[in-house]
Image (cartoon, rainbow, N blue to C red; front, side, top):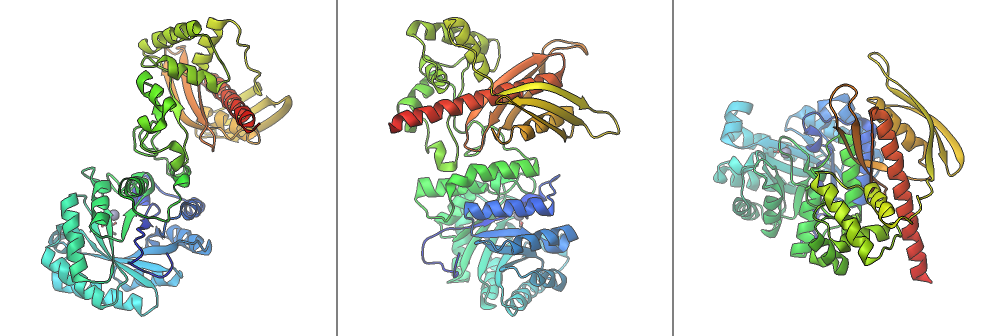
Length: 515
Ligand code: KIV
Ligand code: ZN
């Protein structure tokens, strides 16, 4: 961020994934995980990393210290209430910024803090003065600002500005603001504290956090608080990636964010928090750049902007064409081409008919299904040489044992063995396969579905998976059998081979383009 400035037009991104995001029920990150996310946020280019609320636990304090020792380009901030213990803990860590807050709404003052407005104002001002006297940057939040009496809010902001606060933040703590209200509050703050950086912190209780953050920036806020994937208390915070991409692409605002790392960051946060965005989530959801309908696929193949408001590469992703009952000849042809397969018009029609038949049966058509159909229709596509093959595996599981899988595989004609533990037998087997093949392919599971297709304890289980590498290449596969661990292993290995094949074809095509 360099020197604090409000005149170069750049919108500052205050990331609170590691503080408000971690306050998501059920989420608790280890010190190492916090540091790993902070490193990634720095790579993404956020301006401020809110590393945590250090007074809450020893682990939280260690996490913040770990992040400070990374010496990121971003400023490191921590949260503190206005009491000395919180502030001294924050000051002891050597952070760049202390984000100090006190509630200002009557409901919070009466029922939570049990103090009156006068005392709240005094605490706010004294806290800012105290922190400033220690030479740190100070950001002040008036918690529940959007339900605070505007005349009191104005007074608080005026007084903290006199105490030389650096940034004034307007939290919509329970997500009740509207875009119009946020605009009014940004204007109120500008009048109360001229020359100060203004920030907003919007929660998503009514699904308005992103719209409210955008409206605030358009009204003149210099900074917004957001979290990766929109995680956070209750319905979450403003999704950082959505606010940035909308403001950059739709309104031409400037950020330091390197958007090509958005998806990588989203995946890391999802993996470490266990909170995966819903498939239809903007920017980072699995379907955000997927196309199935024939009309759409035809459009994007001819000209991506027909159905893509930004290229997937803008946010570090790749397009994903899906075969299903809505498919058309162009899409199926393009999907086959991704595997280096060309077919005649007549064959294409038959393949499409078979794909639609599967789709009509309510089946998800995987890459493996499409290739099998193409093979049976043309009778001439050889089974691809599998680079990754299973030789043997054993899984041990039970009540008081860690589920463990030992696996032997043939990888490009060489034998590889490993063992891994997991949360269950499937997880252990998948981790072992990923581990033993990691030098050849970094296939992560981005989707795993298990369905019983017959009844009874000997039911046939069908496993459908989608794998993805770090470059965003994807492939899907399925396997069926009475043993779900075996079916999972087979589906994963098939998916990995498809991914490798797709990558090889792509590399070949690039080489031919270069010649
Ligand atoms: O939602 C909120 O009000 C907060 C404050 C601590 C800024 O997270
Ligand atoms: Zn919050």
